[in-house]
Amino acid sequence: MDQIKTFYKNKKVLITGVTGFKGSWLALILLQFGAKVYGIGHNPNRNKKLFYDLNLQKKIKLKIIDINNYDSLLNYSKKIKPVIIFHLAAQPLIYESYRSPYETINVNSLGTLNILDISKNLKSLKSLICVTSDKCYKSNNSTRGFVEDDKLGGEDPYSASKAAAEIFINSYSKTYFDKLNIGVASARAGNVIGGGDWSLNRLIPDIVKSLVNNKKITIRNPNFNRPWQHVLEPLYGYLLLGIKLYQKPKKFSGAYNFGPRPNTVTSVLEVVKHLIKFWGKGSCHVKKSNFYEQKNLQLNITKAKKLLKYNPKLNIKESIMYTAEWYKSILIEKKNPYKFTTYQIRKFFNL
Image 1 (cartoon, rainbow, N blue to C red):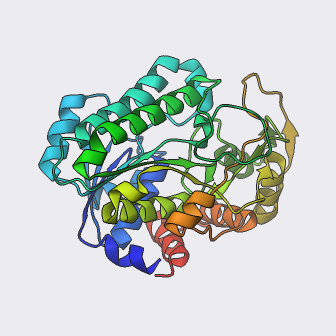
Image 2: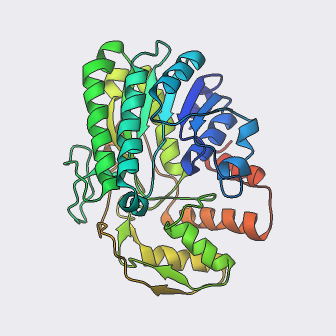
Image 3: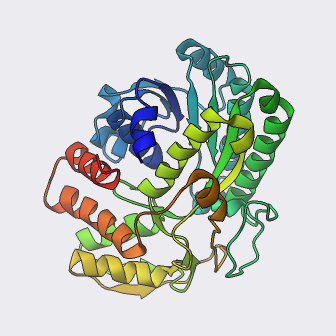
């Protein structure tokens, strides 16, 4: 933790997808550490996006650029001269990928390819962290946690797009970045929860909307097991990875899983029960899903623990408590989103 607090001060950091859920949290964290934060993203809906709730449009340097606009990305990146890039821009929803497969693959796969190709032309760059997903692995529905060298796959368009991105990352790393002495890694995170996620057809936002409106919570797959983690956990891992790539690029380049503590994978139903308990009220019912998803999905985080000294801080109950506290504080108690999110960040990082 202490290394993170000092390393990022005054460093130029570029975040793609900065207007998204994880991008907004990452930007605010980096601001706490004194980094010079630049962001690329879509223009977010002011009524729904965490980015504007945190007033980040006034705190970082934001450029609205389509991730598939190669020339604009290249020109902007060369202009700002980032030392570290966190590539988070993505179409992040499995359900949306069924409706828009071409757009999903275009953004997630070819968008990543654009960032990789642009990055090899940046003389200032030392670290590139490309965030993919735990869904990049070939589905086996096993309760054994995936390790980084397991087979890639993709039963649905979203998973396929992330697997393709992984192949591009590995290829560019071996072909170009090793010779340029730039550290490049892919970060495969589990199911992320936390305050400020308003996405459609995501478990926590759906639960919160039902609770606020005094409606029954609809669950699609109650017995599905996922590696749930609070958003601060993988972001903490990405920040550690950025440091290690900067210091020893060849040693630390590669793929990394970021998930909860071992043997803490939790079912959808258990997550719902915990959130209802922390909220103080609520009930649920089950509705059959028409889309394919793996029943069991677990991550082995031994590599990140060993090489990066990454150790998740929160258990599942604490993660859900952090999440419930955020939504309740903002939606019910009408607290200031910037102040409360900053409070949670400072509490997590012991600032």
